[in-house]
Every structure is written in structure tokens, then in C-alpha cells.
Image (cartoon, rainbow, N blue to C red; front, side):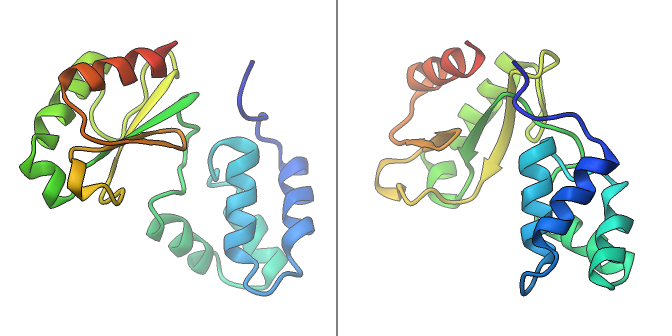
Length: 157
């Protein structure tokens, strides 16, 4: 079952209308669109600009500034590997390389079957037990190759 609904301008208009009267509505609208469609399609930008009476450049700037906003839907699961200095120093780069090889994607990519998106994160607050990762919303610390392989299996199931 798909995690997100298919993009339609009509549905996007409904979502924009639900949030356009909020103070600072741009970010709530962008988040709501991404929650619904799995991304913020380029076609949504002029719709948001028109509804909020701001420039398309302002909307585009928000979408491209914040790394959480995507142009294409990600995978069904998201695996984030911590690449902060502490995690790098304790083997995080080797785990990154292993994850990329096993999934067949570069960091920031999504597997061909759209099961897993692999993303960097730059601190999960587990510096005492690095390296760390997050699968969807669950955080894991003190990862080694075996622990990473287990997370990869879980992410692909």
C-alpha cells in the first residue's frame, strides 16, 4: 500500500486552503503537502505563492533551503546515518559506505524498489555511543557492521 497519495492540483489546493490563514503559513503548507504527497512538487510553488500573496522565489527559497523538503517521494522507510564528527571518528564513514553498497544508492538516494531512502543526519544526541542511526523515528546507538546490517534488513522488509 502506498505511503502517500498521488499528486493532484485539486488536492494541493485543499491542503493550501487549510493552512493559508495561519501565521507564517509557508512552512505549515510545505509540511502538509509533503506529508500528503511525500514531496513538494514544483507545480505547488506558484499555487502557494498565489494563496499567500508572496513571490514564487520566496516559496522556492523555503523549499530549497530546508533539506527535509523533497522533490520526489522518498522510500517507504528512511534510514538516517549520523555523520557528525563524533560518529565519523568512531566508524560512521565506514558504515555509510557499507549502507550505500548494500542498498545500491548514494547518500540521499532511494532504492529502485522505493523501499528505503538513505539520508545523512548530523547529530542524534548519542555521541557517547557512536556511531548512531535512525530508522524512521527510532534511534539506534553504538552501531557496528552487524547492527547496521540488521537495520538494513528491517528497513527492506
